[in-house]
Image 1 (cartoon, one colour):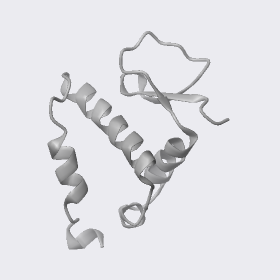
Image 2: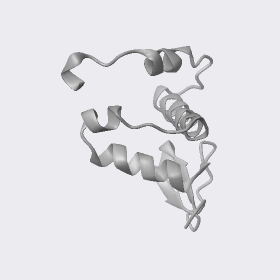
Image 3: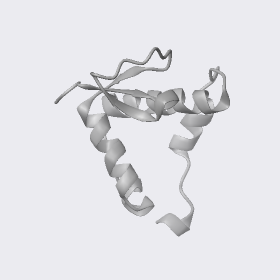
Image 4: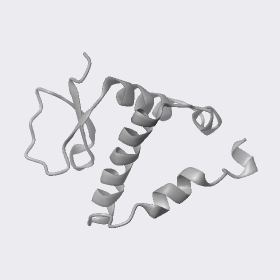
Length: 96
């Protein structure tokens, strides 16, 4: 069901609307973003590297990544410049 999911790295990732943990990292997850996350989880890196998404979806995925990395590090990321750099870097030949 569209827009019926949420995401939190604190509780392991994707949640349905019936799950209501008290979690500061909990955020809405669009159906399109959920499909991309599933594709990335099930695909080889070479296929994932060829994925093209529109800017709106890319922004949502970047935000999810930022939230997740911040959770793993145990603090909010003050600067997302390293994520922007990763976005602009070429992957090594081994993945092409």
